[in-house]
Amino acid sequence: MKPLLSIFIPPDQRRISINHAVKQHGVSQAMRRRLRTHGRFQRNGLPCTWDTILSCGDCLEVYLEAPRHIEPWSVPLSIAFEDEHLLVINKPGGLLMHPTSDERYHTLANAVIAYYNSTGQADAAFHPVHRLDKDTSGLVIIAKNAFVQHSFSKKRVTFRKIYDGLCDGNFPAAKLTVHWPIDRKAGSIIERCCAPTGKWAHTDIECLAHGQRLSYVRFLLHTGRTHQIRVHMAHLGFPLLGDDIYGGSTDLLTTQALHAGGLQFVHPMTGAYISLTAPIPDAWKPLLQAHLGTIKSHNNTAPTT
Image (tube, rainbow, N blue to C red; front, top):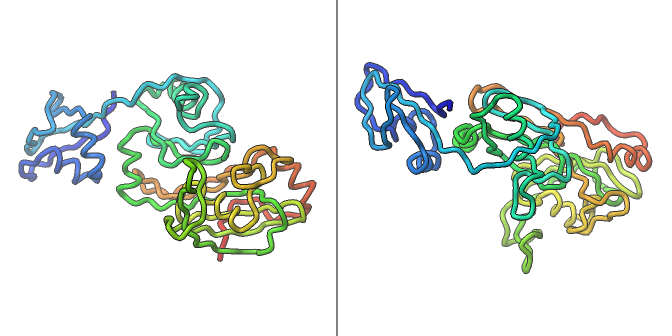
């Protein structure tokens, strides 16, 4: 098993605790708590404990207890990016991110574990950096270990998440910025709504093409509230096609027309700038052609407001 972290204590370093050693290497407080409970440590190749004091010249290796077992499910994956730290998948709509009490087998997590097994990555695990709803397609980042996952939050990595969507009706504005807070809807564990009691939510919207029946819109998220785009569009009176929870019509599509088509971020381990795109779902193309005619470029540039 590969260590999450290898630390060499330099000759001029005073005696130091494991806690301080890993802190100096950018490990967050939350991750250090997890390591204290579930971590394993070796000093100079021999087992040691969290309370061990390291001396100059010591080599510390840090391991983390493997996550709960996920059954592999062999299914093709659309991989947009991969290195030793990260895997970015273009997730199809209709696929859950991880197992639930109702679905233990056919999820993205199961598929990723099968992919790791088939490519000889026995030490890699499923640690999503962010999530997509079951019926939302598009780009999602999977860290291969918990340390990389925590590095995103520790280093406050800034994401640019660009989504495409199809909404009901003739969207009237070329560009629009929404700053409506979102809260849980009273009496529901699933639905959200715009409410002054909620958490601040910021969405930039650009209409790429519009017709009487539907419009093709693009979104740049500045916050990541649950159902943010779906709630903002419904509150505007233009719910997403197929989104029956928030009032969208279901005669053209039966699941919400939302796709995470653009993603930009700075890699927390290498410092490289990563920019990725994923084409719109095939099911949208005949709708665009039939209802909208000429459309702006399908590239995944963010809305500008």
